Image (cartoon, rainbow, N blue to C red; front, side, top):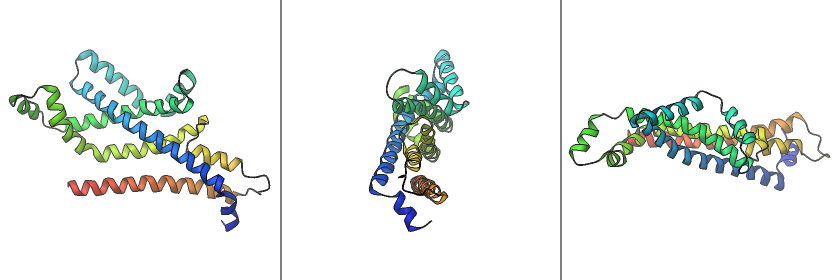
Length: 222
């Protein structure tokens, strides 16, 4: 790697192009995580406390998505659905898949809470929904924070699957940049190596900072 290679790659336009891809990656990740946590929580509650039919439907949903490849659902959503953009359909696939994983994380948290707390809450006049909202779920979220953050990191990395479908996220933009270096540039293995090392370092930096934040939070609560 030398200065000329860096100058060929990190021009103002190229850097802006890469950052636009990173922005899309983070945007997709944020929306996926927020919706998946909300949906996954509902699924976990339904699977744990729902009536027979509801529990069965939710269980089938969770098991199907958790035990099949994410890439399969991206293919299904992008090529079989007829609404939205490719980006929104790819985000939907990520959300459906991630929510099934988060549902099991949340269910583990729910199962770790003593059943006697429901009885204690009932004796104080709380109904089921109030017990969940004010007593059970706050404890559950505190217990599953490390696992949830691990899944957030996985989701950020999983957005790179969307590059296979020409969705302009970070990894896709890096590939486009590599193939569109000016004709005057003699593209060498050093150019390719530099671009992909840069992508790896950016992913590492984001996810490492998230990991450090989770560890620090866990120590404070411990």
